[in-house]
Length: 393
Image 1 (spheres, rainbow, N blue to C red):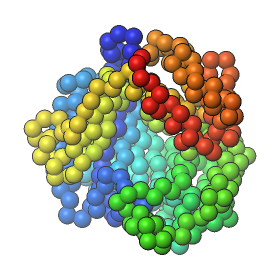
Image 2: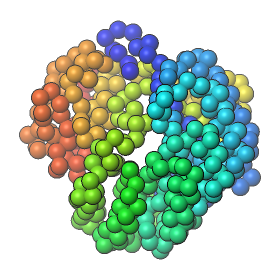
Image 3: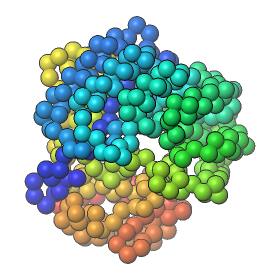
């Protein structure tokens, strides 16, 4: 954790994010740093990634690693031998793992056969997050996904057979041609699986995507704002009734099964960011890596493959603390704010806190603040109140 009362904390990072940028295809809504797998230099990339890991730990040695998250792209497009090589390099560069480490890997249904899952399990992966998105084949093809609903069930069965039980799935709402009833069916089928964790996101039409082009041509049949709100309310009530706690705006879990890695981000704590286009945050330094596969491989030959990096100012860190911390249902506390910044929370953000309390979008309990039920529906408006308000701290 970073301490702003003096020099940066000497506590080393305990979380690692690693980016595998390859996909079988590009989904219509995706603006992530990902590239279609065909003809990509996968092993060259994995060797460059190993070099970045080696250089990173030389520069800033890690602590005991409590969470590793491999995202993408689709990490599970790696072949079993590539996956085995990759996981060995991770363990070689970060050998000191907590006994209860959370080692997550994103996966797409249909890309996880038994052999690959066995390699993942042997390499230390103990949590898998599947990008399911919907339980209607027409909706899946309409957003550019190449799996079908049958693949979802087969992939989950394969994972369980490999001994992987800490499983999560992603769903999406606000999709083109999606109705409230369709989302209700997806939620029901998802809950019937009895998984420990679910992430459910609303579609955002991002620039440089096919959906953005269609949107600009008025050819993207999105649900109305009223229907999208109904979807989110249905989602929250269904999850609550099934015994899942909404611990973050888009995430629901059984008690104790929350994503520890993502909580690192929401608590504004340090983490390594490795791979093409990855972001990292270590001892007040935030960086972004070179994005393209080829440029990343070349850059790693000459040192750390940084595109840019900057020292996070005290003001920026305070604003980040508020924006990411308020995403969590537990919210933020004066004690945690004082620990990082040696200042009372209401002395720095008293104005916007009082405004949001009066508006009914935040609620207060002692020295803690969190989004109200109404605030969950207008989270971005709340977060915006804490941006650009600090001038001379």
